[in-house]
Length: 217
Image 1 (cartoon, rainbow, N blue to C red):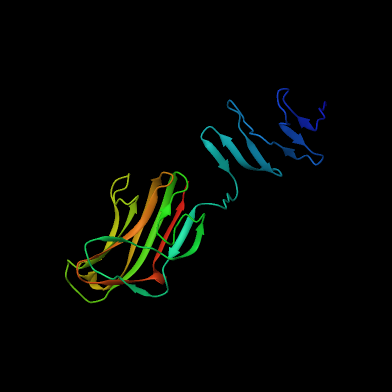
Image 2 (cartoon, rainbow, N blue to C red):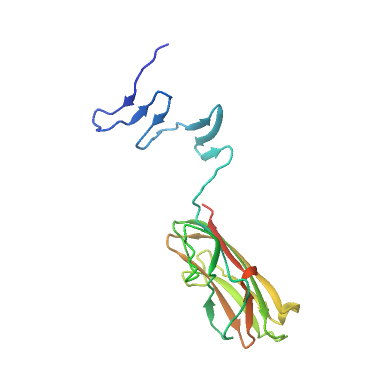
């Protein structure tokens, strides 16, 4: 068996080492490591293969943990808050508290989530509201809607919209839900707005109302 004993490997035209080996068998590569052609890359922990590259992508074995995924869970105060007016205008909803806000991409001041990178994102809204007065009038209702960059229409088509009221659907207290999976470009903004129509006023409870989202990939 032949051996080549080296501590460093360097190109003749380079000013620094491309690869360094220490006495414990550790390898340091300060630059990029590129495998060209059809070569696969396999990574092992002990004798167990943990990562394998192939033509269709990458296969991993075990937990794939990421510590900085853009994500947030926002909520309101532990009390009811009445909407000041009933009108025909959508108003932004701002959740002043967060259970977590990785990357601080959700603003508790403006209510906006700003995408830090382009990718596919997941959003979920749970919003608890009560009418201040009973009504069976179909023209008295309350709605919430997700908007992207201030628009109710998303690039994939359609809208993310739901409502309470319309004769109360049997109960003046209701929980509204919205779920969205959408591609976003960097710096796209996602907001939640409400519409308190026509004359019946509503109130919402912050403890039972949340706005959540995260980057899928």
